[in-house]
Amino acid sequence: MTHFHFPFPDGIAKRGLAVISAAAALVFAADAFAAETHLTPPEYVTQAKDILKKSIGFKTVEGFGNTYAYAEYLAGVLKDAGYADKDIEVTKMGDTATLVAWLRGDSAEKPLLLSGHMDVVAADPKDWERDPFTAVEENGFIYGRGASDMKFGVSMLVTTMARLKREGFKPKRDVILVLSGDEETAMATTAKLAERFKDAGLLLNADGASGALTHDNQPIAYYVQGAEKTYADFKIEFTNPGGHSSEPRADNAIYDLARALDKIAAYKFPVESSEITRESFREAAKHESGEVAKAMLDFADNPKDKKAIKTLRAHPEYVGQLGTTCVATMLKGGHALNALPQSAIADVNCRIWPGVKVESVRQTLAKVIDDPKASVTLIEESSTPEAPASPMRADVMAAVRKAVDRRYPGLPIVPYMSAGASDSLYFRYHGVDSYGASGLFMRAEDEFAHGLNERSPVDQIDGALDHWHVMITTLAG
Ligand SMILES: [Zn+2]
Image (cartoon, rainbow, N blue to C red; front, side):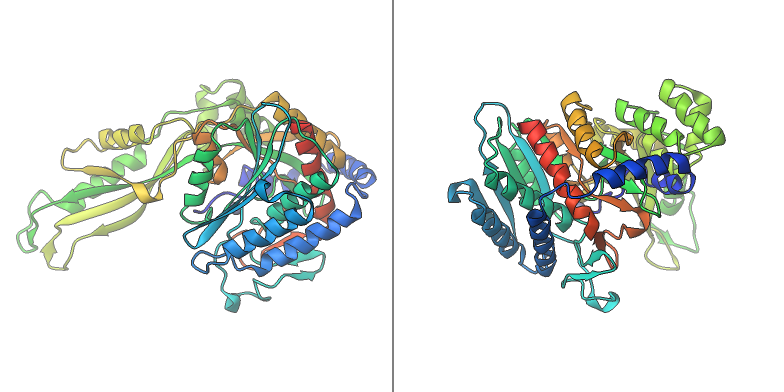
């Protein structure tokens, strides 16, 4: 499953690099330097770096069967820190595995889940400058597949769990580490974990980067991911008895499909907004100018503002934040150059607004096509669960504020909705409020998740560990 890694909106973050006020950036930088020296005891920084490097060495790509061994390795780290055998569970599932670890709390308050995934997407060593499965430290970065997506996050979570145990931290509620093993592909381990822990109080996901930095490492904003769109593919098919191409008839599967696609192209799903997207637009407006900035603010104030909607819809990077979108992505039709087509098929990919039913989108497409000959079906294998947005809870936002202020006092904290789907989506589906809120700040140009030469900055380890320590002790202390 592909999913979104750089804070929403990608476009805004990138534009933000160019237009963020230099004065504002300098103020944050000055505070940051004062606060950024040794937030975490050095032994944990050393340990986290060591775990990250060893983690990259486990080739946890689908089909290689290394995830169980990786989970066992991480379990060993926790045992060394004092976790009892009964509080750690490594479960094999097909060629992958899950890891669950409990830091037991002393009240009935619903658990705090810490989420991450141990698997990585494939990487072909031929294409890489360095071996993707041997961690290399160079120029202040650790390179390797999973360096940012998301063995960095996993290493920070495991180190923090180990640290909390060593420090004798007694949480009020259970703190449960839940690591999945096939987030990048089938998400079967994710589905299983989400079903099992559906009664949890909330979930924090360490996937990807939540903080955005400018080219010269000045902070732009911290993004809290509180919603993901549902992913669904639909097959639109027309069939026809066909015949000889020397005797064309009026009814023709390819023409039928072409007309249907024309209607889909022209159709716009209803405009939607949420507290998350309105807040995102307010923040994004600071990094835009002219009529786009105005449209963002106008829309945030009044999501029915027609002029604002029209302006924002003209920008592909914002369209997805205005509602459900569907677009044709693949075509297939006919079987011979000299025959009338017996079938014509298009695949239409939809990114559905959180809370909107997939079936209702299918029905809308059928209604828009308005042709009884059309069959519109959901391609079940690729679609994700229908999950609502998580509310921007005061306790979560206060913990994030506290954690972010340790490094960058006063930095804007912005909720955002991504195109999905991470592990969080499956927990939201079961009603667990879930937030992408990692401790990693990155520059857009360093974000190589799923790509070549993936890396993470070494100097982020100290702050990221502190981030998790503050988040967990605040929300579970
Ligand atoms: Zn990921």
